[in-house]
Image 1 (cartoon, helix red, strand yellow):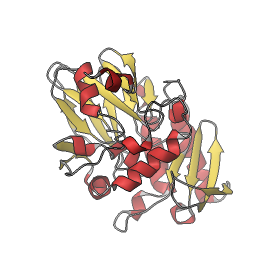
Image 2: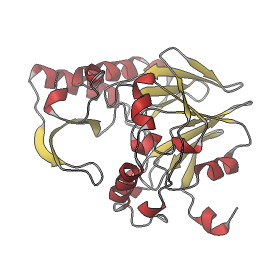
Image 3: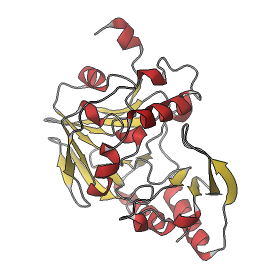
Image 4: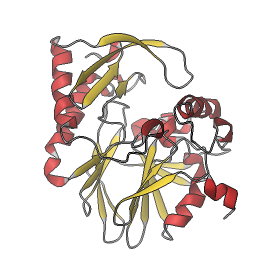
Amino acid sequence: MDFKMFMKMPAVIDIAYKTYAINEYGLDAMFLLEGEKEALLIDTGTGVFDLPMLLKTLTDKPVRVVLTHGHPDHAGAIGFFDEVWAHPDDFEMATHLGYEQRKGYAEGLLKMNKAAPVTAEETVKFEKMPKMMPLHEGDTIDLGGRKVMVFETPGHTPGGLSFLDVNTRIFITGDACNGNTLLMGFSAENSDKQTISALKATAEKIESLKPLYDRNYNGHVGYGGSPSCRPQHENIASDMASLCADLLSGKEKGESQEFRIGNGEPRVAYFARRGAAGIRYVDASLR
C-alpha cells in the first residue's frame, strides 16, 4: 500500500470481536462485521477515499455490501462495488447520487473537521453503478457462524434498514433514530414513509427489540470529527417515540429555524428535542 494513501485512511475502531466502526472523517460511519465465510459492510460512506483498499487491510473474506439507506453520506461510494443490497424503496435514490451532490456534502461537513487528511476535491467519480439487490424485514444474512437480522426502519428515508448482529448483540440503525433525525425530503411514491408517524413506528420497533441488543450504533459516530465512538443512549428510542406522539397530537411544537444540508440551499424547518432524541422536520412530514 502506498504510504501516503495509508496515512489518509479514516479511523477504524474495534467495537467487538471482528467488528469495526469506520469513521469517514466525521462525514459518516460505516461498519464491518466478519464471519467465517463472508464479511458484511454496512454502508459505503461518501466516497472521499479508497474504501476497497481499506477493506483489504481488515478482512480477507469476500465482502457483502448493504445499505441502511440511500443518502450520499451512506450510499455515496456504492460505485466501488459490483453488487449492493438495500431496500427497494431507496434503490433510485442511491443509484442517482451525483458527483457534485456528494462533493458538496463532503465540503460542507469537512469544514467541521479541520484535522481531516482529505478534501472534498478527492471525492471519487464513478462511471458505473452496482447491481442493486433487495433486502426486506425478516431477511437474515449468514456470514458463516454469524447471523445478521434485517429490520425495516423507515422515516428518515422510505427504505431505511437496520441490522442486528445476533452474536455481538449490536444493533446498527443508520440514521433511523438519533439526536438529529432528519425528516426533510419526500419521494412521490413513498411520502407516507417519511413522516413523523413513520418515525414513531420505527422508534417503537427499536424499543421493542431491546431484549435482543445491548448497544445501538447510529450512522454518525464521531460526527464532525469528534473522537468518540459511543453507542446511542439507551433511552433514544423511547424518547423519540414519545416526542413523535406529542408532535402529532400538538402537545409539542418544534422551534422554527433555517437549515442547510451540506452546501445546499437554506430551508425552513423545525427542531424538537426530548432527552436523547431530536427531530428536524418540515411541515409536510407532520402527519
